Length: 419
Image (cartoon, rainbow, N blue to C red; front, side, top):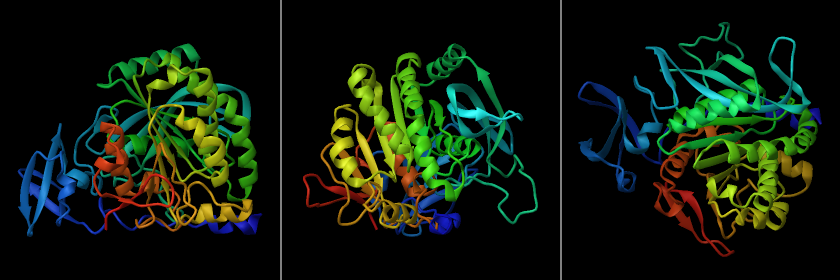
């Protein structure tokens, strides 16, 4: 098993920062603001989101402004964050911002107050304060690195600053409601992580996604006791199964006690197993409450494709919520999982790709990703841009930038990013 998963240890930073394939970026000065823009002829980028058009190097640039952050349509996900904030972040200084992230976990609490790798019989609630440096590159979780000789630096790194983890359920949902009521759309984003993820890594990823997506509601994550070790894949599989009751109840509590009108769910890899099973149960037991779920995003699901198609998808379709499935043929982690389990995974593209009525399948195979090609949902700027429009305006695939419908052998079409 160790040798089998040894290759999963290797990862390389994403190579591309482009918001659309084949569209280049270069700095542009607009007034006193220097930002990043789209060059080229992808006019669809500018579709209905453009306030002003500028001619640059023979192409057009679409300009948007929100508070003191300058955006260039899809280009707002391609460059560095200018000096500014969004509703879910608090700017503390010129060099950093802090995103409060709410969480529930059934990990045991260690003597030093951190959360470990074993399961607890009850759920712990709390809030994590995560630092985002204002020089943050979208899609990145800045860290010192394996061969770096420096410590974490809040002016340079995405890092956990503090954790409040002794809250009662009552206090937790009271604070969560306060945060949601301050959101224009009373919205909540819930993330369920996958295999080989620590509690701190889950907190960082949730904060980074919320910040990069410019999500103005409450970011929340559920952390199950992943071992955070590449050779403990099968241990994580059982840990996910054991966490399902806690995840189901937490999601039920969020639906009933958060006061959120718009709930967005994102699961990655093995985390899709827990989330989809929880949703199947809630669709049966809480049919009215699940109507507040506005989107279910399944990113690179490590689920058997046949199981997903025949046992899971029919129940998910009864939710009534839109479902987006991101898949790739270049996902090395899912290729390893396919070899281990003897069957295609729901997150894989190719001849046996999952394409079903009621589910929008997005094939990201043409995008540049890191070596494993498994974490594109959070570190690929094109996918982040696609998710931004999906979440911020509930825009379907046929209306979103840079997506092109492709015919399939089954009923609906699937979608690829425009070259």
